[in-house]
Length: 123
Image 1: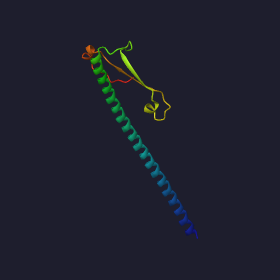
Image 2: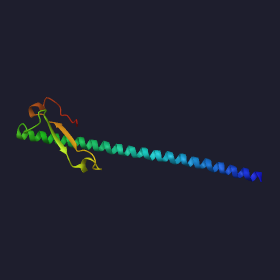
Image 3: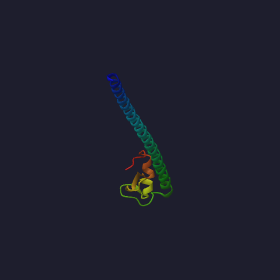
Image 4: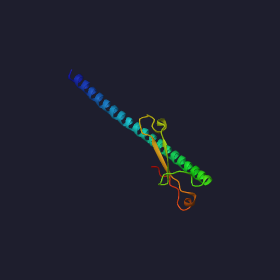
């Protein structure tokens, strides 16, 4: 009778150890999935940033082209920055709860364009 009790006790201990090992393995697997998810989101953010830089460069190039066509470019702020505010919340914030995004691009007159490199810095 004592041998049976010891055998059952050992089986319960083994079952508990296996359950703990499964729980640890599951936690490690969940952690690995979370890391993969974060890496994916970081990659998407970098791609979006590259696309944004491409579009800012294109906008600056088109603005320079228009300036060349029309002279000094018309009314501007005193600091030489032209500003554009995107008020479409769906384009700036997928949840729709954020503020509008403002992009400012420094556009030099055609006479200043050759002396200074273009700036892609977003404010």
